[in-house]
Length: 94
Image (cartoon, rainbow, N blue to C red; front, side, top):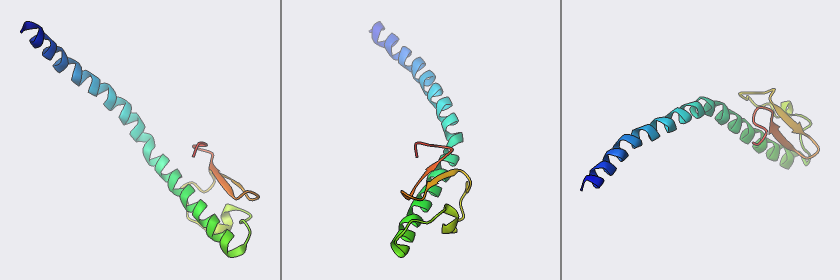
């Protein structure tokens, strides 16, 4: 019986400590979240606009500026007009 009580006490003590560490890590990640969402949104809008432009003109736009989009980070993207691909300089994996 004592073992069960000790085990329960250890769980009660350890659980809040574990949650506190997770919350601290999550808080740091949450700070970056708005930027990541903005970049993701920009990339989606650019890629969709490239597809529409390519469909209407049978060619890729020569630059992102040709798409006349309002972006959160207009100067933070690398565009390859030959392939019609775009990447973020802030988050290259996106």
